[in-house]
Every structure is written in C-alpha cells, then in structure tokens.
Length: 222
Image 1 (cartoon, rainbow, N blue to C red):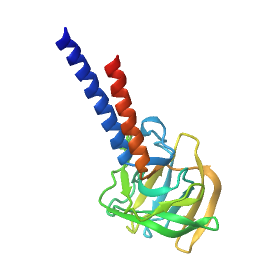
Image 2 (image 1 turned 90 degrees about the vertical axis):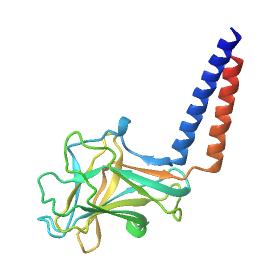
Image 3 (image 1 turned 180 degrees about the horizontal axis):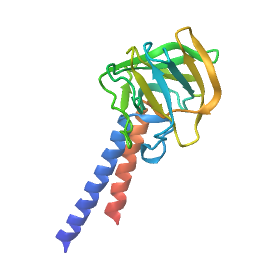
Image 4 (image 1 turned 135 degrees about the vertical axis):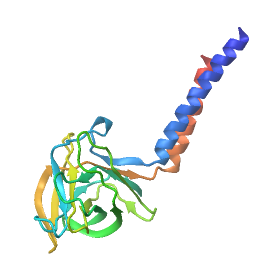
C-alpha cells in the first residue's frame, strides 16, 4: 500500500515538474506583448496584403502596419504568416521583414531587419501557420504605449508575397512605400497576422518556478 502511494506521489511530482518545465520553456521562448492571431494560430486564409518586387505588374510595394506593445522589455522575436502569392512567377522567393520605430505617424528608423531566401511556401489551403520566426539580437528595447511598425517587403524583382489578415478584429494603421517614401493607405484597417514577443523578466521565471514548487507541495499533501 505504501509502495503504491509512493508511486502515485512520484507520478504527481513528475507531472508537476513537466508542467513547470513547459511553462518555463514558453517563457524562455518569449512573452507575447502583441498578438492578433485567433486560437490555434488561425487567421483569414483568403484576404491578404501583398508585398511585391519592382518587376511585378504592381511595381514595388512595401507594406507596414503599426502596433503598440503592452510592456517595456527587450525585443525577443516576431512571428508572422506569409506565403508566395498565388498564381505569380516563383523565380524569385525572397522576403524582407523590418521592425521600425515611429516617425510622426509613419514608419521611421529600422530597429531590426531579417532577410529570407527560398523560404516561403507557395500559397495553399490550409497553409502553414505561422511561417516565419524573426529573432532579435537582444539590442532592441520596446516601450509600452509607444507606436512601432512591422514592415514586409522583398528585393526579389518578381516576388509577390501574401500576408494574411487576422480574424480577431485587431486593426492597425496601414502604410505603403512604393519607392518614393511612406504614405498612409488607411488610418484604421484590419491588420495582417503577427505576434511580437519580448524577453521574459527574471522575476517571471522565478514566479513560474515558485508556482511549480507550490503545486508539488499541494500534490504531496493530497
């Protein structure tokens, strides 16, 4: 009987440890400060914003949407869902993603940038979500309540990139650069999907560990 009780206790302790480890790994991976995906990373698979290369029929289109972080902390990562546009020339497959500061209501200084080549999947339904993870170098701090911009472009002349719209009702300011500077397309429109993560504070990890220990103690008393 005593052996059975010990096995039950050990099982509870293992489950608790796994739970704590899972929570810690999520925290280490970055804490979301802006997140407009629906449950299960879902989004609108049929309505997109296009970023295009200079050799397309659209000419050069670089898109940008603003967001405001809820916390002040070091930038950790950006996650977004984009694919190659459906029915276009796939010779070029490049994407450029930018994290930008605000300049009087327009995208301003580039804080971080990521370049991807031969990475994007061709559009299909259902398609992968999310597709790209852009990691920071630990040098950028975002400030709660301030406006920032996520921008998508391409240096691939024939690339057409689809950036999918959210279904959660989040809206943003929409700007476009067609080679001559940024212009406001809409001051309030449904934004494309992306998630901005910050580096968790050490206190957050400590609280997770303490909570896990408390859970283990409760399991033992039970």
